[in-house]
Image (cartoon, rainbow, N blue to C red; front, side, top):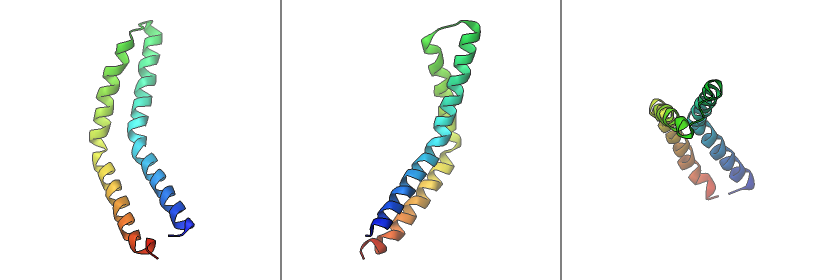
Length: 89
């Protein structure tokens, strides 16, 4: 395996990981900001109030993006399996 191939594999791995994390982390960030904004407007400083909306929204994001995540992971795994013969050279 050449250094260029190893770098390309790592780049694809990191890129795929970031693409898969975006829907979940984006949802958690947006919901957290909205709940913090509402808490600052209403002066309601309950610490446990942020967990329930985040939990529900992140769960929905995982359920709704599960097809995309599985398809992306399958494509990545297939491309890695197809690279095995070139790694042996």
